[in-house]
Length: 488
Image 1 (cartoon, one colour):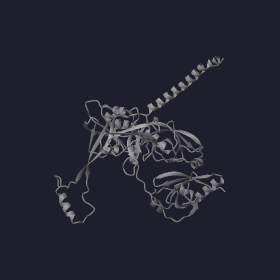
Image 2 (image 1 turned 90 degrees about the vertical axis):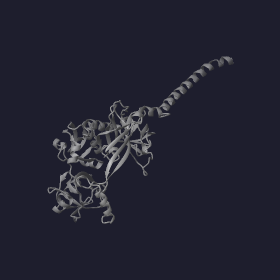
Image 3 (image 1 turned 45 degrees about the vertical axis):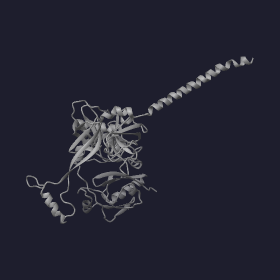
Image 4 (image 1 turned 30 degrees about the horizontal axis):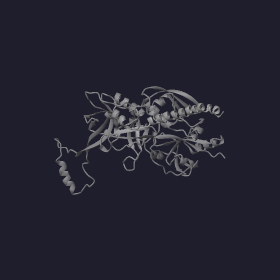
């Protein structure tokens, strides 16, 4: 009887063990796959891409100052005599010069010899020499540069096709992905460092910034070198480091490939960049501005000024909020600048704006930003010490006189009220208003007298508005500011 009771046990045991073994195999397979994603070595990747990475040496002629700060020193007679020995055929003194050199990195992007590096690596260089991984050296010609993104394109001539590396898609890169940097740190020759992507979409200084942050060691001399993903694709150009001592502390920045490729394409085709230009001055929309303008939520880019240009020709006006540009929803002013800059020059695009409580669609033919920037004159700014006439919302404002126009560098036909004093504990001060600012509009209506300003504030309070919109001009720039109203 006992034997009969024990007969089913082996079958059940085998079934349980089969399940356990199957689960174990599944776990092992998963762990194996995970282990494969973490490289045991970068050697194969180095062998794959090293032939396309180059060292860059530049030579620059630097003109030294002819006279030093010690004018009148008896030693100046000696230096004058020395300078007189260095005169040209026409008798004109030749300024003393010296040779400067710099080291950097780069990478080949095509078999016919196009090379990408940083603008600051080759800036003002008289000679550019490329050293390949094989040890061969070739002189390079400068094709074009873009200081805004710190990118430059060079070209070498060779009879043999060169090894090159492709660009990858930086948009699919994730924080935590493995990356490898390669270049010429501190002039030590070809060197490799590895790490992970620490962060994405970092902004440093420029409006077109889109940096990948990495802890892969980057030092001086790595500038212009490639940041690779594990497939051997360039996802960034190593550009800058954050360091208190000039050496790597694990915070490096590489301009993302999706920015670089657009710049490189234009430099190869035109020798310069050609970015789209809309022709507006803009600012972000915060919650108080959104409420004052009647927007359901804070979004888009608020137009503060419209000089002569494509936007003005298309009918865009101050106080318009740009919600979409060429089908792309605009979250803030920085996004609009990047989106417009990436658009082709002379392209007709649809721009959706919010005006007076409703949306409108306008068709704008873009200009070229580089042409517009060369035509913009420098603006001036000067504070005012005029006595106060009236104080509202933490602001002391006074009427605009000819004397104030001159002090503020305003046109003769400029109108508005001048902020002559401001309470530093007020919301207006926290919002960035300062003495010398010109208030052109109050409550979306132009004002030129104290009475008009006070009337607009009282009307807004009577209507139960929670915030009050001001159009402020400082120097040549205008922006909107929404101040809270005390309606009690």
